Length: 366
Image 1 (cartoon, helix red, strand yellow):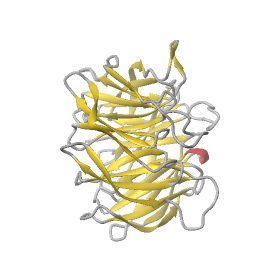
Image 2: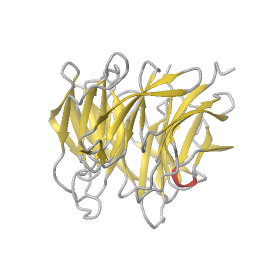
Image 3: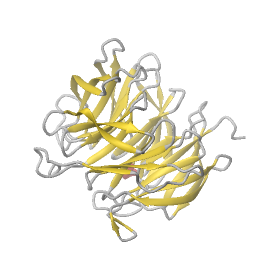
């Protein structure tokens, strides 16, 4: 009955951390019907603390989650969990956990071969890399790199705040957004020793007070798009995959003209077609939509769509590109939109799925 349906894994907050009142029990799994856009409960695993961000292994059999904590088993910092997926039920089994050696880990990604997991620690201001064992469990961290410095915003940029780390399409580099330093660091990936080696050109600098948070690559591998949390902007770069160098193309606002009040961007994704780019705005509670010029990499504004909830954090686009699913953290909902392939605009389907404090949505691969 489920053969054509896809599993979706939902990362959540389980505790009150001040900026969020976590109500969830752990990681949730749902079935998604790519024909109708319908969602239904599949399973969940309880007892996994603040599994805010997730990554699915290329084998489709393992899942990794950061545990957004200040202390783990007496060690200052959070943890990262490895789990095994039962593809028939959506059930999850905890394999092991490792300390992240930095407080409040907020992002986990895998290198494209699935040999290593990489973590960004927000409060710790550092990044770490872990070997993945043959059974899917995590080995001890093989490298950690500490960022240093501060930015212009005394409240949010008093020190480094690594917010994400992402492999490039060649799997030769990893790019780490640091909200506190207004930089995107570029590391060479040493997949023999499990090391993050600063590139010859070690970072790209964004405008002061930007607060880079997440990024996504264009499918052609030539462009990178960075969403900036603090001033609600989005910056387009060209990407030199040989040298590992970012060059700024354009910076645009993620909010409509005239909007005032708090600014706080979250997630960013390029449509699988490479034609459109989407970003989430918390506070304004919307998704911004841009068209991508695939020759120049530059962006043209298309519009905004309400996420029909409060505080949209992560969102995802189904592999076919037909649907976009948005996680509204503070209204405990996942909303399904249909993507118009001709315009990139989003149309609400009327389908709403209730999950406590959802943060991150990831489709099972394969």
